Length: 200
Length: 200
DNA sequence: ATAAATGGCTAACGTGTGTTAGCGAGCAGA
DNA sequence: TCTGCTCGCTAACACACGTTAGCCATTTAT
Image (cartoon, rainbow over all chains, first blue to last red; front, side, top):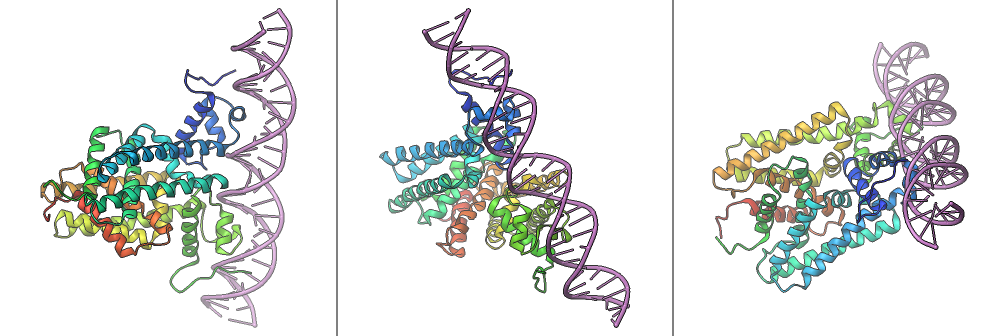
């Protein structure tokens, strides 16, 4: 009888969620079957249901786990007493970091949330909209402070978030450049793209 | 007996492909069923097979249709005698234009190509890799010409392509700003992010 | 007008899906 | 050691999927 192996600080449920994130990222939520997941966990499909309620629950856990982390971070940053452009940079750094270190979950939350079902779907979409509004508000503040170019804040947020989502490709491509170099490049382009050019 | 309505310059097959693109975009390839597609075309599921070979064929047609358009465009731009940074701008404009006017197909080609099956999947991935290499080569040229900042070209391509992919969100959001304004903003941020700052 | 091709239809197939029921092995605490 | 709970298993379910076969109506070409 093959039990799910767990280490000290993660339950069997958490192990399943982690494997699910990896699988959903690779194949997409719909294309990944519970039997696939079971195999990757090392167990029969039916056994999974001793730990989880449904396939959708796995998606909830992944999506809201990620969403909550981002919500907490933006709250933290909003409270700091720094320039708006610095807040934007901090936020970008956090996004990149998340994308590098919690790749699978962030990716899934980004691309597969459509498959959430209705009480959760609505909630998620609301949180997402809120987050973007608050991000845009920071940028608008920077425009008033004159350390950000007078651009459409919504568009800027859209570009920034999706650009970072593209780290997916970097992740796949055998890490030609280091995480630090990647971050530096992205900051140069993104912050450089919206910041008022003070130096040179 | 309900026939598929066609206009002068599109066959029944093309009508089906267009509807498929719309459906695949909305639900994802796997989640969109042939019965869904049939309903949106106004016909029974089995009838679709008088015009197409399989569900996968629909995905091929969509993905390679888009890929070919981009390949032709980059070839055209490579041949022009203009600065590298201008080539990049032209390419970005084309991407944005495609994303605005052939939204569904471009989106599907971007997000659902994973579900292509193997002779086609490999081919598509190769074309994608080629395209990005050629895009990166233009940027590297611009760095040598000193009209583009000395950044990692691969990262820049990655950012640009994904940022434009984000127009998806704009498309959904009731078009708060015009297509022209959106394009102008994106050019400001993206080109501004990589260009050497000559003017202020 | 007649023949052939086209493009619908219904019915059904096999397969893969998420999930439940029910059973038993092994670990935990008394 | 005994008891109960955790967590695995096999078997099976109902259903949704892509696709095929075979039939008939309508359009097109001769």
